[in-house]
Length: 84
Image: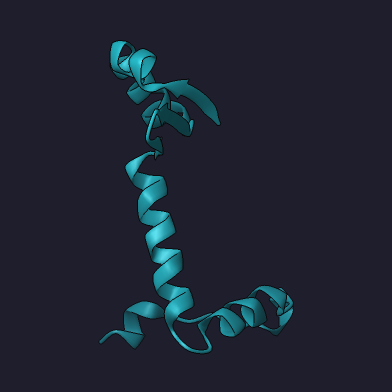
């Protein structure tokens, strides 16, 4: 994470935005009243999806169970036929 103050961020906005978008850098910008974080839209959407999924009762446990299931215990699903 890169930290900068608001004055420098204002003068380097294009460069900071490019670092966030191209390199997934996170920028912490400080002001006299507090600070804020610049993240890419992809990172933001990922965080929002994670928060949504974890808000569903039992979803966290279900995800953890899936992660811990050995691949040989999994079934292959033909999604095209399932969706018809």
